[in-house]
Each structure stands twice: as structure tokens, then as C-alpha cells.
Length: 239
Length: 62
Length: 137
Picture 1 (cartoon, each protein chain N blue to C red):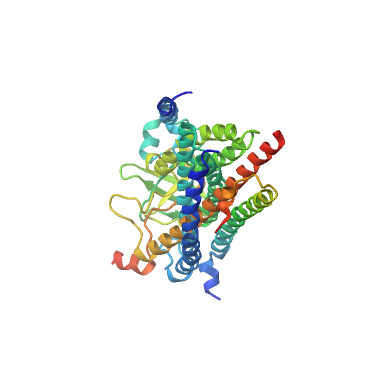
Picture 2: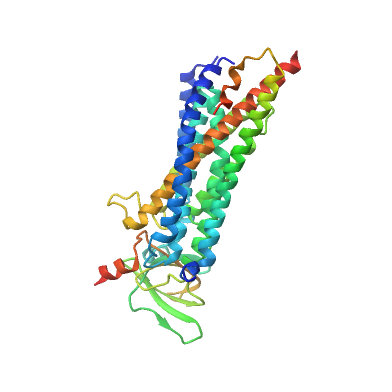
């Protein structure tokens, strides 16, 4: 329990920034949705289906950031045995799974009219499906042990091995022929997307990200309280 | 009314937004309920025990 | 107690090993990882005519011809160097256009690619219609 003072300092800061991100998230979603659904123009090729991009792409960013968080927390837990890192990885996994599910479902709704199919086994789509299974695998593995530290370590190894999937997702559209188009934003020659369509994309990105921070803090608090409860019950039982 | 037809793609655009928002709201409610349940249990347990340092319930203060 | 530096080193070594293994597998199975071949690759690869494959490229301007059968369509796709003629019977996706990318699935028969599925591939450019028409003027 010697980590308790560190934990309290962490949660002091987390609780201080929580309202800020709540307000940003609550403000960004209506504004982002307004620009995504009303203010932005239809695409010259895809028509109004392009609006699916504004919920699809930020979810993909979120899913990647979430995995990065989970993988880094896992590395810190394995190397430094920091209990907060174990909780952070556990908190990130369900959020990432949810984000990835959004990516897969909205992508299917986008592909159906535009490509002519809702699913193909190209490198991008397959690697994102693997990301979804990595999240589910982490959740299953981390909770498969009676001792949360052992479960956390087993999950952390999976999370780190699966981190190899991140560059594969990102660069799959550049390394191989895929049905999925390549990135419009992260290009050497600048974004190939007009400002009035980029704006709702970035607004929705901010909205997703601030919601991610809110959910991370809430989950960390819950998991930490659960961990304290567990320790108290064990202490009470052994008395 | 023409707006809602989304240029003929209403059957793809609206479900996408609906499902995305549903999953996000579900995640948020789930995150919130985990916090509420465990923190409430923790406060109950700490109130029944005088030997526990109140430091451990600091996290419940908003 | 194992030291932190040792654990860090072990972890980096382990991940480097896994990363190399994955990279080697992906390079070795490149033909399976790619979603389609370009017309040039199709020509140089000598693929088994029995094998169903996908070929992708840009639909050549003015190459689309309908008929003679119902819903039969012939068009040429190109990767800049090589073109291949595609014959397809069925409904094309909304985004099928001359000058746009497509991916056709089927098999090569007498230098004509008999497709049973045609998917549209869209590029990474996003702009409103008025801007697109202004740029083409």
C-alpha cells in the first residue's frame, strides 16, 4: 500500500482536469455533429456518404490512441510494476474495443454504397479486425486470473505483442494494395481534403478524444476503488 | 425533408451516426457506473471500519 | 529481484524478435496480403488461369462499352503501363466511373478478365462538387 500517496496525488490531478474535459466533450459533440451533418458539403464523388467519415475516422484515431495508451501502460507495469499502470491498461481496453467496433460498423455502412461491399479481407480492414480481437483478448486474459497482478501481467504481454499491429494498421494502405483508400490527412504534400470538410473531422476528433479522457479517468477511479475494496476484504478475511 | 434523405444515402448515413453515438453513450454509462458502484461500496466499507485511514476515500471527492 | 534494466532489456529484445518475425511473414506472404494485382503484375506473374484473383487499376476514359448481353459491360483498366480488358455482368457500384479506381475479382481467360465482382476504389481526395467542377474547367 506504499503507493497510496502517489495514487492520491494522481487522482487529485485527474479529478481537477475531469470537469474541463467533461465540458469540452459536451460542447464539442453538438458543434462537431452540426458541422458534420449540416454545415459541411457533400463530396463530389461520394455525395452525402462522406458524412460517415466524421464518425468513422475519429473513432479510428481513438482506437489507435487507446491501444497506444494500453501498450505503454503495459510496458510500464511489466518493467516498473507500477499498479496504476495495470489499472490504466485495464481502463483503456473496453474503451478501445468500443471505438474499434464503431470503426468496423460505420466502415461497413460506408463501404456498402461506395465500394459496393461492406467487408473485404484487405490489409487495412483485416488489421483493424485484429485490433478488435486484441482488445477482447486483453480483457479476457487480464480477468482470467484470481490475482489481478498476474492477470495484468499476462494481458500486458499480449498488449505489447499486439502493438506490432499498430504500424501495420497505419501503413497498410501504403505498403500493400488495399481497397481502403490511403490517408488524406497525414501526407507529405499536405491534406487532400478541403478545409470545410477537415473542420468537422477535427472537431469530432477533439470530441472523441475529450470523451476518451473523461472515460479513462472515470474507469481509473472505479478500478482503483475496486482494488482498494479487494485489499480490504482480503485483509478482513485473514484477520 | 429532403435533407433527411441524405442524397439517397439515408439508409447508410443515419444508422452510422446512430450506432456510433449509441456505442459512445453506452461506454460512458458503463464507465460512470463502474466508478459509482465501487466508490459507493468503498465508502460503505470505510464507514463501518474505524481502523482505516480516511486517505483511501480521497478519490471519491469531486 | 530481477532489476528494472534487465526487464526493460528483455522486453525490448522480445518485441524486436516478434517484430522481425511478423515482418518476415508479411514479406514472405506478400501475394496474399495484397488485395489486388496491377495489370502489369497480372501480365508478368503468369497466374494459374483456374485461380480466382483480383486486379485493380483506373478505368480508362472512353473504354466502357455495354452489351451485347443484358447488363454486360466491358471496360479497360490501366496502371499507366499496361491495360487489361474486363468483362462483367452485373450491377456496378455507385462510384464506378471512368478515370476512377476499381478492383475486379475473377479469372483471366484469353487475355480478357472475366469478372464476377467489381468494387469501386475511391481516392483520398475529398472536396465539394462545385470545387471539383471548377477545377476541371
